[in-house]
Length: 189
Image 1: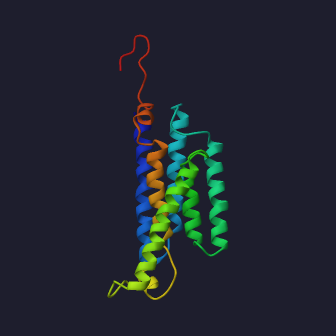
Image 2: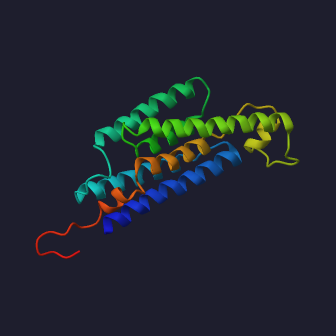
Image 3: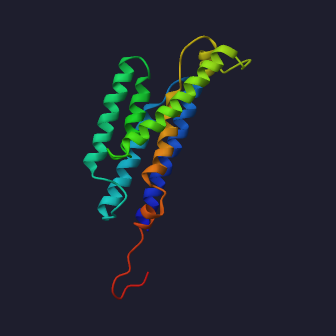
C-alpha cells in the first residue's frame, strides 16, 4: 500500500508542477529549471519504489522511459533550434516524457501538440482583437497584444502530460489494483 501512496504522490506532484509551469509561462514566458528537476525526480522516485517492490503493470522497462526522454529531447531541441519553443520548454517536455514508455510517447506528443495548436489560435485571436485592457507587464498576453508571435508551450506540455497520464493508465483500475496484495494460500486480503 505504501508504494501506491508513493506512486500517487509522485504523479500528483508532477501534475501540480505542470500547473505551476503553465502559470509561470503565461505570467512571464519562462519555466524555472527546478520544475523540470521536480518532475524528473518524481518519476525517479515512483519508478524506484515500483521496481524495488516488484509491482508489475505500472511502468515499462527503464530503457523504454529513458528512450522516450531522449526522443523528446531530440524533438524539442530541434524545435528550439528552429526558434519554435524555448529551452525551458525543451527541458520541461523532456522531464515529462520520462513518465511515458516509448509506446505511450506518441500519445503525449499528440495531446501536447493539440493543446499547443489551441494556444496558437488563442494567440492569433489575442493579437488581432487585443481584448485585454492592461495585461501584466512581461506576460504572454502583453507580448502577444504587442505583436509578438509567442505561445506559452509550458501550458501545452502540462495539458499533454495530464491527458497522457490518463491514457497511459496511471489512474486505471488495472494499474491501481496492481499495487494491492494478491491473496495466496492461507492469506487473507
